[in-house]
Image (cartoon, rainbow, N blue to C red; front, side):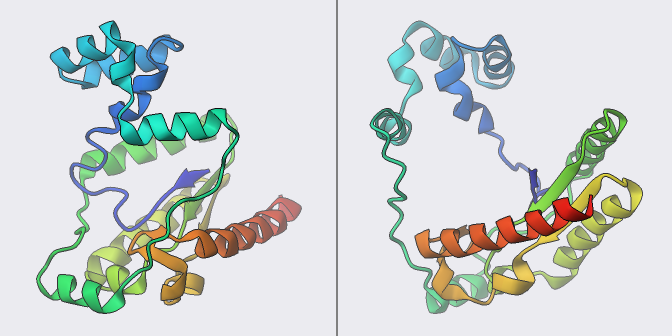
Length: 201
């Protein structure tokens, strides 16, 4: 399962994703190497020498909730369409860009998985349609690129839940994240589509 969106190939995407691996530096040589290669040296050694520094309030809270077996979603935000329309008019939104290096790395990953005979599902969870339509030509280019990969690689399937849900603002906490109600509804829909897909395979 590969999470994709209109912004999957944008410049600077997840430049600080190494921070997600801080908690696993001690357990996994791979995680440690990834952090060491990507984090600033001072930051790496601070996290390495003082393990408690690996957890900010958000990560520490998640760890404590996990330890207690508390898997409830605490996100209570509700998407405000009028406010977001204002931000769009001011150009204050996450823009789409097509970073050729990111796209090449994506294709390289699919080629490797195809060679290893591993099936891939490109899963596009919904973002609000206001965001998707803010840059329609670029959004269409990304979607076309993803469809091209399904034509190129027989074991790659593309499931896009935007047409079904992106207009249902009551399901969103912000333009790119579902709220708890949306998570339940979309998760059910994903499960149904996966069940149908696995029957065909």
